[in-house]
Length: 213
Image (cartoon, rainbow, N blue to C red; front, top):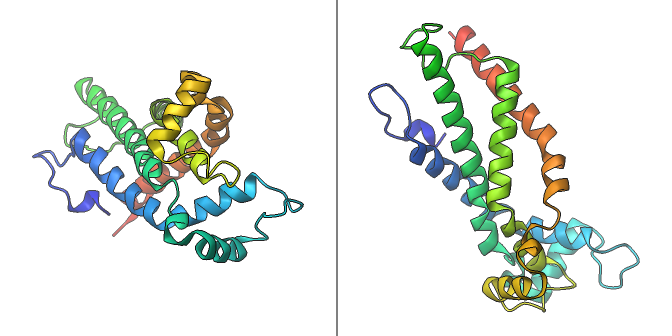
């Protein structure tokens, strides 16, 4: 939706910065709306039903979080979450640029016409681009997830005074590797969903392009 209202070049294309900006704007809005839910999720995932101060569910968690910590509690970890907006922005920028470069190469070889802006690629090409863009984005931005989790975790919420303090303490006690704890399982967990999402998106886009009246 955001890309629709951006000014394109003479060929109808967006620049890498425009792809990055569109993704960042959408991600920031999502982070603002969803942050309270992420706080509840993090705390429920780090406690059990036998934990004395654990949340019983979403509604109980929201009520207690707001009652005990106010608005500040609902938006714990928001700053690193906003940093995390760059994850999706980087992923989509890399993906769109890879797709654009691939089509340009096919145009140079005469495989497709020069006025074809979004020619259909093979399923394998879409998968490779989806995986590559996801891995690049994950490695580039993963530290924000560690910071956000530490700040939102009920057991450690009072350990850190803020994002900067949290970062300093992680670096001092755990080194650079502390910012990448859990990276491998995190990437492996999201790759199947990423691949499916991009395949469905691209195939539906192509279908509508050829069948829409």
